[in-house]
Amino acid sequence: MLMQGFANLFQYPIAILLIFIGNLAGLIFGAIPGLSAFTALAIMLPLTFSMEPVVGISFLMSVYVGGVSGGFISAILLGIPGTPSSIATCFDGHYLAKEGRSYRAMGVALLFSFIGGIFSAVVLSTLAPLIGQVALRFSPYEYTTVILLALTTVSALAEGSMIKGLLSCLLGVSLAFVGVDRLSAYTRYTFGFRNLRGGFALVPLLIGLFAVSQVLTNASKRNSITAEQAKLQLVQQKRMKGFGITWKEFVHNLKVAGPAAIIGLVVGILPGIGGNVANLLAYTFAKKTSRHPEEFGKGSIEGIVAPETANNASVGGALIILLTLGIPGDNATSMIMAGFQIHGIAPGPLLFSSGNVLVYAIFAAFIIANVFMLIEGYFGLPVFSKILSVRTEVLLPVVIAFCFVGSYSSNNRIFDIGVMIAFGLLGFVMKRYKYPLAPMVVGFILTPMLEENLRRSLMRSQGSLMPMLQSPIAVVFLLMTVAMLVYTVVSESKKSRKGAA
Image (tube, rainbow, N blue to C red; front, side, top):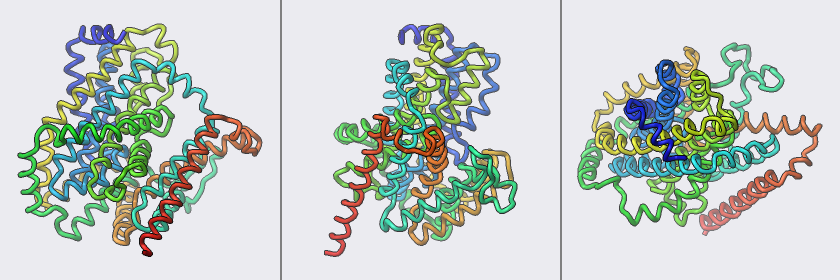
């Protein structure tokens, strides 16, 4: 059936060209802080009105793939995640860039983004209906335990003082309660400000914490990447071949990419979670299972492989839930769903029985989009790397301008620019006093989902948590959460003993 999908797609030569163009547009949007895959899809959606269904949906698919992948460019070069899906890539990627090894870091990120995308494409084209039925069995009980497991990862994202990591996470949890409660419509912690009724938007918060704080840090140091480091980067770039990674290193990192791809796929399947969480979960898992966890945050290649594999694998997971059940896995897939509706197609179980040719053509387009992403990214690596040679006094104002545009475009509100500036100052102060930013982001992203699903569980069982212990899936996730907590306590006690010795 997949071969028939390729044959159907190649009947429209314009579709292949549009996949190429859409992928390139997605890469550019993903690389600019704040202009995510969702923004790119929102802009490109009207262009598909007059296209054939296969052509239009294939075009949107390619924009989605490029948008998710492009986030690693600014994450590595500037230490600013282009999209929420590339937060964890900053930790080790930018460290390598400051050492003059940005070409290597981006080459690894690009290669394993492709592997994560192809893995999810294979699963999507072979097991989509089966996985969709399993995901359908998830109730609020299962979602609650999954999110609890994800919150336990905050311990691995806290470098140095565990107390500072927990305080950072609690700050993110507190900020997540601002705004109108989703279930009761009760207004909380707005202090009379109408603009806070919707809470703090994620995009301005992320841009402020990572982008503005990084710009302020760079400005305070006058130059984060010196001229000597930029020259070293050019010298090493000329020596690099392929993707900047040897065959032996590639095979070794497949051990990290495999679990990361599975994590990304599973998280992508769960509606409302997506690549924002997948990259952090995969990074945490890689750090916990690595033989050299002390290297994470200091230029570890595994710290780039895991999040980039996971966030691209989550794309296929989000598409599985969209195509099989008609449920958008994240904001970006909601735009793709709108594309289906424009062409009079209803995603869901009947799509596989009534439109097999179209479905497998979409699968073929997804695979081709990942291949084009690899090709375009490979030839763009030398161009991207030259960003580091731009003088700081020229580069930083450009970055700030993009930050303003990205923050405003998320909700078209001037208020969000103020939010960005406020969180930029907060992030700068937290960095100065060595409070990690990642736990705060994890707490902010996961708390609304945890609260909503926990309260739904309690309403469903009239205040009892026992039904949660009667669900085999929920019990498995609870046991994994306990195991993660025990492992963290034991590992931290060992570290403290070594420090005392």
